[in-house]
Image (cartoon, rainbow, N blue to C red; front, side):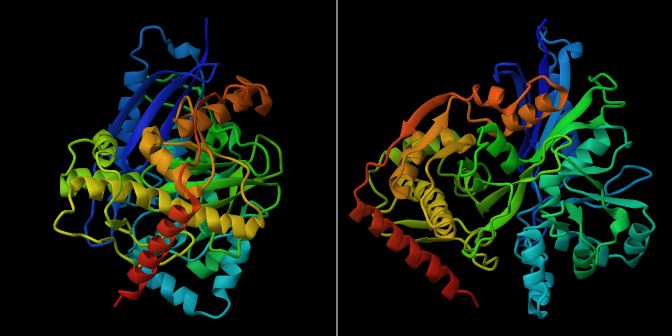
Length: 500
């Protein structure tokens, strides 16, 4: 009788639950979206209870497959939207307000004040590998506590808990028995010393976060927790693998060697490179982050990262707000119906610019419109913008490394768009590889969980499971590529000049 790993991919716009077999194949899966809340301009929130219900429904749908028995689930893996911040009551388990999503810009004033203090930015970057930005969890926690003096007192008394989404899901899956955070997620909070893999007292003081509300930091793979009291799952089923979504995708792409890199096209797009056992300090606007920690191994693996906050979300905007497509899958055919954008440019900076620019005040733009511009030109400009953001990140990474990357693998929902992949290869000026399964995030969580239970014995065994679907080679001439990059650079600069 075959055994399986259950993988939970809790993303920004929806939750995917999959059952993965020993060959790394997804044999059952379920996906459901949940509501996005925008209470003010630049604010983004989720309801943690709604997220939990999508996890429960996904598990139920997956395990309705009559060929899969509960006893065959040997481990559970979790991957999650990383910096999204949840605070809940330890006694009741109820969230205290909605989760503040990683995209949310409400803490910009807090960030500005911290950056104005002499030496604070330097300390934060040296210890965390990050920059002070509303993106990360630290200022979100502070904002929540600042809204109610009673909350801060309760936090100091250990009555309320903070967690990223992995922490919250483990709390729910374990019946409130375990308050933990996986180390790659912890590295996204601005509160963790990434060389030590521990909460740092100086950082906690800077961000005014009580240590008593923080979860215990745990590895990415191993006996992390157990299920208790969850409908549809056996009590005692191990939760044996956890990683932030981008780190999970890197692991799912079997990027186990220093220099291996991937781009994930999800709500945002994120380029990560395995930088080995030592954090690589960027001088070009990128982040140093923890990639994973396996089992009892005290050695941490690090990654160099750059992310654009809006990628697939731009296509959703074309669908939901401009209504120029009825479903996201239509964008490829629409964009393919024209050979060029005819000068139309799209900057999808709906929540500011991420790496390597780090300007949260920039807003989105569509420029170059003429009377002849149509929905197809805007759709193609959207795909070009998704690719051009990654070029900025790659050029910064090349500058930090002093040499080009040797290869890039792609994954995520939008990587199924072959036109986008060809545009990406053309604008990068290098070949990219797309795997047979683009659900690398799901697979990464599954692989970590499988390693944690012995389902897979080693990384080399997992590496053999990766299969290439297609390679996209650059076809654009250098002169045309340089022209695209020059126009994009002008657009980015213009967006920053237009700020009031």
